[in-house]
Image (cartoon, helix red, strand yellow):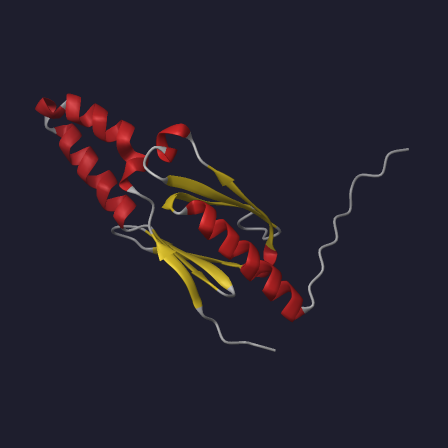
Length: 145
């Protein structure tokens, strides 16, 4: 069994995800405060990092206080791709994961480049990990009488 953890992808959300805020702050720049709001949001987005390995997803975020969360890939149940029109114009998308992890039942990798390719890489890594660990998913639905 291969226990070596290898990197698959690393990146941050695109600053395009802040376009609406930046646009409004640009219109109101003469008030001075919006400049600081836009700068803070830019800093927050640039400090949000996703690392996808062959075994887990590690999310690090925060400017003054840093928080790192991780999700074991074998806990992912479904990976889907969402490409809103305004993000598709700049070749970005969201990868959404539904998981069985109690602390992270839903995870969105937001505004990432080549989202379709990342989703496929994730799907392949999830399947490989499940096969190597012998993990099977069992959904127990509601019984109706």
